[in-house]
Amino acid sequence: MEIAAQGRGGLPRGGENVAAVSGARTARARPLPRVASEERGGSVQKKNLSTVAFYSKSGLQSGELGWVQGSFVTTVLRIDSENPRGFFFFFLNYRKIVDRIDSDGDGFVTTEELKTWIKRVQKRYIYDNVAKVWKDYDRDKDDKISWEEYKQATYGYYLGNPTEFQDTSDHHTFKKMLPRDERRFKAADLDSDQTATREEFTAFLHPEEFEHMKEIVVLETLEDIDKNGDGFVDQDEYIADMFSHEESGPEPDWVLSEREQFNEFRDLNKDGKLDKDEIRHWILPQDYDHAQAEARHLVYESDKNKDEKLTKEEILDNWNMFVGSQATNYGEDLTKNHDEL
Image: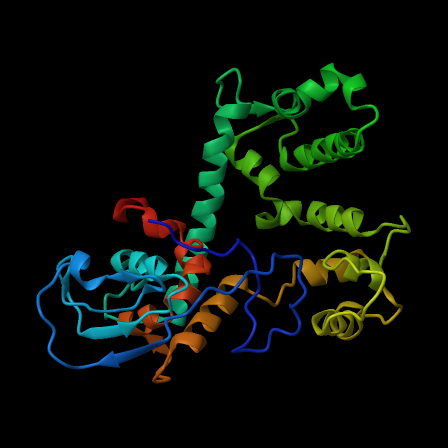
């Protein structure tokens, strides 16, 4: 069964003041279709999913949910026909995640519980990612990855056949990325033995998660955006990183808003450009916790009775937002068994 999900990244907007962090270098997620409305009450008969979900040319229209996978549900839903399968997939799988988030087992999900869970999901994603690619680089199976192993696995063909890339854009890319990767590898290699343990390789692949790698993150960001090579990021370079302007036509409102963000929140010393310290403040703000912000955003948008905690029903009512959040690992965790979470 398919399920729509948003791309990883995307700062929450709405529900709290995030002006100081909007415009960060993250993907803008596409909103998912929502459950249009609901009706409660009435008698509910004992049915299985095959009888409650029915399709027409315009999609899944409505259904009475009774005993489904051992749970008695007294809700009759009118489903947005854009993504009916996504909703029912979420309905069948979300409880196992919510039960894990609800650490004290009181039947409610608080902001603090959501924040703790999101941090757990972030960490699990990072280490799962390293585990998936480890064997591709650890060629001699010594449970370490040397710089030479990584270089050969990543750039071996380019290094062995340089003439094939001489007149292509890939040549410029490889020529730029090879020394950049080597610099990052050395920064992650804390004992300077030219090999990376699993923890060191994790820092190499995900430098933003490690304190000793943050200078590399700032430097790489500067190199990516600073097109004129003056060592700074001016406003046009800042905008060009997120928007490609056409020759004709005005800029969208959100671009104008980002220009205001640059002037008001990014350019701290008001000299019209960002230095390394200002870039660090932008992409790695010390006073901003992404997990905390996302948890607050989810609670704010889902908490119908404003008691500052969520029931399973409130989460189900706002299912599309949870599918597009780190709370469900952007929908991926809905496919996992309880023990894998």
